[in-house]
Length: 261
Length: 327
Image (cartoon, rainbow over all chains, first blue to last red; front, side):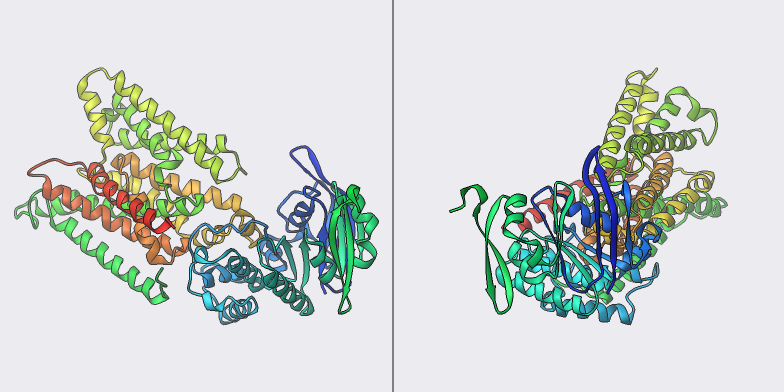
């Protein structure tokens, strides 16, 4: 599986330090979750790895290749990015949206090749959106729209997928279905990093958790080791309960830390 | 909403090509109030020196305005964008009006179009300096609107200070837009610039498609948004600057044509480009023929005619959009 090394990464946006000296290394297989309070720098971390924000200091390496040395097209083939907002500007048909994921693989002026068509079809089946193929994205519900946009990233077939709050606005069934799909994608060898607010999903599905607070990496490791009551109380200011079910551990916030019963 | 298939787009393209050919032939065949080319020794001269440049301008300017409108609507992701939104046509108009005001227009044959081109170039340079290299579409549009307002104020000032009413009237008539009495020399001057602009803009389809999902996603799909913006500005400046410098202000073509064709091209910005170029050429050639048919009765400028057709049509579109968007 693709390795990601982040070394002393610092990012400043408008003179404000958003990430300072963040270092971690991801080499073992499994889904990676980035958790942290609002404004901690989770999105900026994903955006930095996606090449969307300028890095002030430090380095990001994908499979030991410096991110900065990649061309725009090489980067687009290696890294897929799913932003938090689900903006779509024109009522384009669902299949055309998913097919945009093939742009990095197409030659200028060329249409979709047979391989492109296969990738698009597979992504649409994976996210269960084939039934809306010809419909406009703007006619779909929020949950359906989210699935279409994830299918777009899957069609890109990158070795790394960065998803910022992919479950926002999804009902519980679709949240679980999405994470099962992400697990399946990870099982096929894709490195997936998800920024998440939902600690239950993070503890249930992630094999590796990065905890970010005030622009710094506070903890990094397995959910069992990282998502401890003490850490959650000090970082999020919440009291949590831990539930075991079918061999999985779920973290449930039960109250604010200072009003703990 | 009805799903469109690929062959529908092909059929649309061929339909538009047919329409352009018919309109072009009509433009050659129909004179001011007359059908066919009048017999006589001047027959060939009328065809090659009068009607052919006029038809070529209809083709190029119409295609350029339709295409620039489609590109700007796609780039700015704003269905209200039109070729004038970057302030380039305002710059060209100011340059031309100043040329009329100062007498440069009358001093030599190409004085008017060259002044228009200079105005367009200055306003484009100002746009790039004000908006900066890396700002987003909104900044570009705001800078364009500011420049358009400033050039409109400059035009008003020039008209206000006109030495005599004839100069003011000449400037006003020029600004209304016309394809009449354009020489082959003007065609050689503006034609290549418009053609180059069209070539630049036609290549942007892929990038505009990617922008459908926003700037960030487009960047992660490998689109160089800085280069895209430069191409949008330069291509539009070439097309709109050269068009306005020669034919005056021709409104609504770049606004209405992409709107009409959008639902026929699956709302995909890339598919809209070629169709809008063809649709713009067809509309402008047809409108020019109509001005000639009306000529014996009333002298209507083509810019006035396109606005007269375009504005009610646009109103109809707005009403239709309102009913579609109201839950």
